[in-house]
Length: 335
Length: 125
Image 1: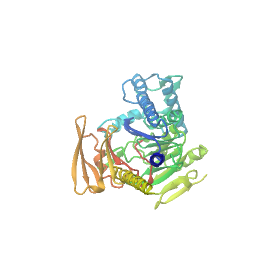
Image 2: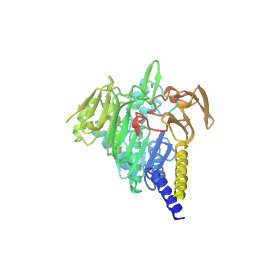
Image 3: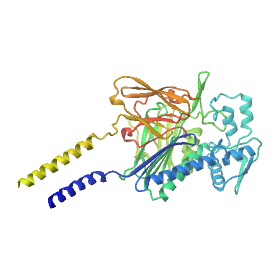
Image 4: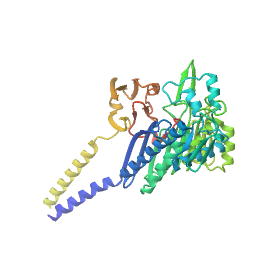
């Protein structure tokens, strides 16, 4: 009888050992902020933490949506200014600062221009030049003031669109939520924005691919990271065609037309999620030379992977050791 | 001694049965793709086991996506969404980025990350 017990115990130990290598994980996929999102969490309490992170993102979507009923941003746009929640005011204020830091290349006041192009509709089209010129007069980050929870527009018909910063901010808040729940390993993808929490469950770095702007099913390089954001902006996913020309959705605030700086994909890697999101757009708009100046002015506190129209890639020195780009011409940007 | 041998044989047989069950359990092969609708996995297809082409239709709130499945490949053939991005996207050949139809809340992607890649940063933002 003892022998049976010993054998059964051994069998039980073998089976439980087989399961030991498997980390508990949970994954939620959902649609928010007009894109597909996925949160994968590892460790104890994974499902509960993933659900909490999702709830955080959805509440921020309700706050920052340009079209959502009752959103702070819609309210302020329809009323030509007004009071918003403290969190909304703080992010608008931060976005204006980031816009100033980029010399206006990142601009949350382009809503009238985006509306003229119809990018928030199902039928975008090249706007009439007079309509576009009129929309351009109603933009400018210098014409928006945030004081406490009050947002004021200096011009009639202005509006703000937080689309190029809210996803990054939301990813950062979701990461915070996960960390507060004791999670040390997670992966958050909000559309094209990636946010890693800690390292992978086995302790290695996350491998994040940067989508190729030339082939939607391929990637141009892979960067290995931990506990930071990897955000890419490119005009190759949201665009329309008219009269044989392609028009993408990233507007150059100086011209009112889709940016054409020679950069076809701009990726920012850093721990500041809102900055990563805003600067990826800014770098796409401003081009490689201005982007390098911005990187140096910012004391290299973020890193960049810039893909140029000819397929060559520029990588800042901070992440150069972590970038794999087989068969691609890569130039290191040094201080 | 004989009893011990019997017990050893019983134990070995039990271990082999366990191992057989373990290996026969369905799991995702490298060619297995999942189709999600509004965050819910509605179908998995092992593309390496597909021998001839076929189509399947999925509906969301009265709108349809027609998906064409072939040996080693999958694509959205038709969609009555406004932008048709999922159709323009073409085949999920190397599988590094998913096929997404935002209006119809449809996602098609490989179950396992190909090439050891954990996520893809893309230019939707």
